[in-house]
Length: 263
Image 1 (tube, rainbow, N blue to C red):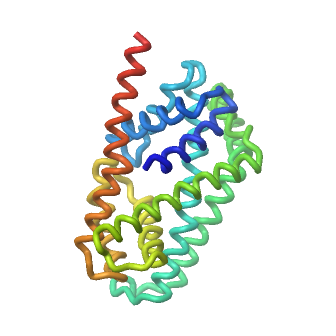
Image 2 (image 1 turned 90 degrees about the horizontal axis):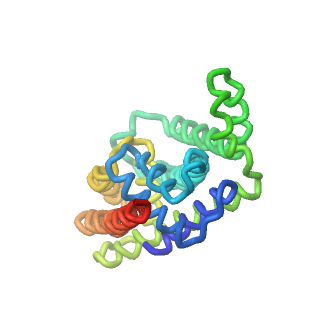
């Protein structure tokens, strides 16, 4: 869990460096505060608000757009791995619920989503620049044109950090599967986790509801590789506690401390 959010802290630090220099400790506090703020908002949208509290007031709007770039990077990695996971499942497993659908449709749809996401990510500056020319948005352009300041290599670095985070998710799940005596190979664990995170990305939800939604999805995919469903569900639940519940408690203390210092 520490390294999971450490990589995210480095990523956010890199992104906001265009606006304001923050040290890694401040960045880590901002990440934990974001987890707390995300707890009651759909698809963790409140995460932006929690993080930018640690920026100067005049930099907070720009900081939210910088955070958005990092979120897109994580989505790109989620889609890439989800595409791989679902390809393996559709290629090697017969799923009754999907028998009436042509697999080519799935591969085509997922490929289109991946290509569009990659295009949007690496051209985010051009897209934002185009949006800024819209008449009623011009007056706000000084806020979101920050997205145009990241070059190709910086965007690649953000993707690499996002990949490290994703690798940690997979390792965490696999270790918990072992802990709960789930008989599953690492490659199979990767396929289950990759498919689960991708489907979760597609389903709007509140962070508090994730534990149930993720549990249902991971049981669906996990049943393809193991009959030890209780262990799979236990691993999913414990990982939610480790990665979100515990950090959100720490983050709430960080927010309270930040507010007390501001008074």
